[in-house]
Amino acid sequence: MITEECINCGACEPECPVEAITAGEEIYEIDPSKCVECEGHYDEPQCAAVCPTDACVPDPEHPKS
Ligand code: SF4
Picture 1 (cartoon, rainbow, N blue to C red):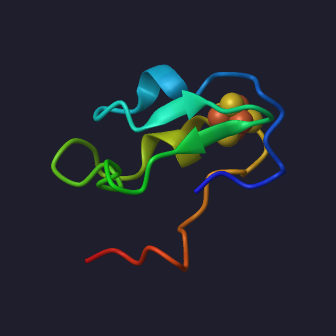
Picture 2 (cartoon, rainbow, N blue to C red; picture 1 turned 60 degrees about the vertical axis):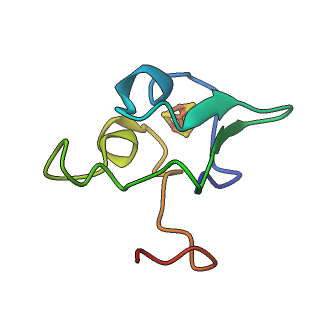
């Protein structure tokens, strides 16, 4: 998920291998039904790796299954 720490820099959007990130009305958003936490693509979630404000964090309401 993306928290209100987001400053709308847009860095995360092109890094997502499953196109789960889009610009929302106020801040960027991650579609939890698409997000695979980069498993099978990279060693770590790429949005969190590039985010300058640490706004990309695990969503407690959508734990990894
Ligand atoms: Fe927001 Fe971080 Fe994505 Fe930039 S990289 S748009 S600050 S969530």
